[in-house]
Image (cartoon, rainbow, N blue to C red; front, side):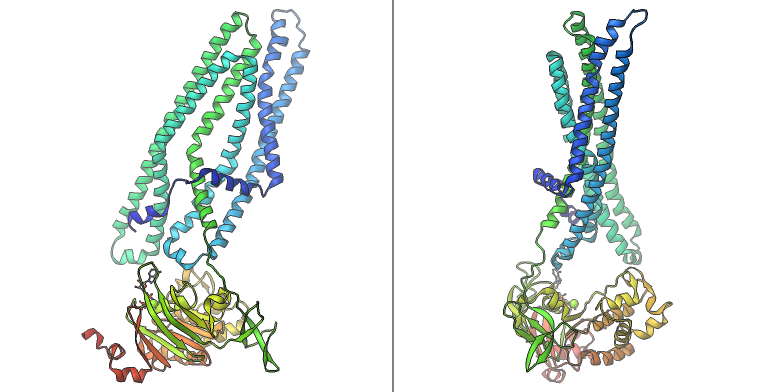
Length: 625
Ligand SMILES: Nc1ncnc2c1ncn2[C@@H]1O[C@H](COP(=O)(O)OP(=O)(O)OP(=O)(O)O)[C@@H](O)[C@H]1O
Ligand SMILES: [Mg+2]
């Protein structure tokens, strides 16, 4: 929400322009045919432009001047030359048109590649990446950053290349036509470039301001929409509007200033090019009068003077857009190149059958699983034995959240975590499914260090109901099936029954086919939790982690779920985190956490008898301290 937060996130300047440009070219190389043809077209159109202007020299000197004042001039040569010139013009027009078509095609392909790569990369980013980037900022990568590359690829880049060809061609011709006049034109063009450069430099800070405020606007809008209910509850609508206005005004001011500078540039450059034209014309006329140059050459020369000033001032005006596109591309490439979630694990989850007393991997789906080490081929049966050995962890350096936590869950045991808010309960589950890695100590699963297990296999074997419920756009059935894409409709309904979600789902307008809007906004909080439980249940995992799964559910429903859960939990290792202590009374072990440390452990009766922290929490005496 603070200004600082958004600002720190995005650097509007590119750090390494040559590297980013090289990278952009590497994407273009994936379209060798298109790019080669674009190059051919660019060269063709530059050549035709240079050539067609040159035609004025022979036309005027050989086919116009000698016939002036004649009674019946022979115009056949003149017509022939004009036809040739028209042919050359036409070739140029076709080449330019083809170039634009091809380049737009290639650009679409490149942007498509970049988007796909970016999204795939984001799926492989560690959770900590999402901790440090706002949604608005992430959306910016796909909208602003990728999209600003389109004009760069489709327009600026071809213009730059064709301008380069033009400059080479035109200057070559100019020098061969007249040296002195070329120097005059060159000096004037240098002045234009310098003016553009300095004006552009003064204007750039406003340009950066626009970019920064657009990014701020995105972040702000996103946050205000997400928090719309809170905004209304606290009557902060006016403040919200004022906050928006601040960023929007900044964008406005930036745009006005940028346009002011751009507006200055245009007339200055245009006038300069007129002056150049006039100076060249006067000097050229003098040379003609002195007989040192022909009128035809002067005509061609004047055309060249016009031809070169246009693209150069055009290109210099695109400078800001180009810088924006390059810095956007750099941000996108930085994400694509950043380190993915590391997965050094080798053990895989496989279906097994017992044959002659030994476990064998099999391809058909059985209810028995094992951990297979592809190196040795050894298979360890999956039992659901989870141990934490002296685990120390912090989300940020120098800020320990868990201190030397050791605990074990034997297969089939129900382990409950209790403790005040912020004690580190969710953190433990985050470590078990490896959203984060432990700093010290280790976590083992059936005796294997979880770092040695492939993340996909590890998470496959864990059924997790997260503290924050999350549903996707789709039907209720789709959302339950998210837990196991192979599950049949019957299995999904069975899971819903188990989670006691079935009865409310049937009362929905279209039952299991009811569409859920964004994150299940058309359901109650408790209903969303029930769907989350059903989703975990359909996966049929050997280990279940339930983080506050039943916190928004009434006591009656909770009892029903508990019964279902008991069925679901049978034979599984279960970690439960609950604020309502009534739900965890029957746990094999209750672990009481405080400030990231285990301060008590035991079963319900033992802990009550201890009259410690659990006793206080359970009897509500804690508040009285
Ligand atoms: N993504 C994160 N980045 C930095 N710190 C975090 C992050 N998530 C949690 N923390 C910090 O870690 C500590 C433990 O948080 P945790 O979510 O494990 O608490 P909890 O016991 O689950 O609390 P609750 O009962 O409220 O769910 C808290 O002090 C919290 O501020
Ligand atoms: Mg929590």
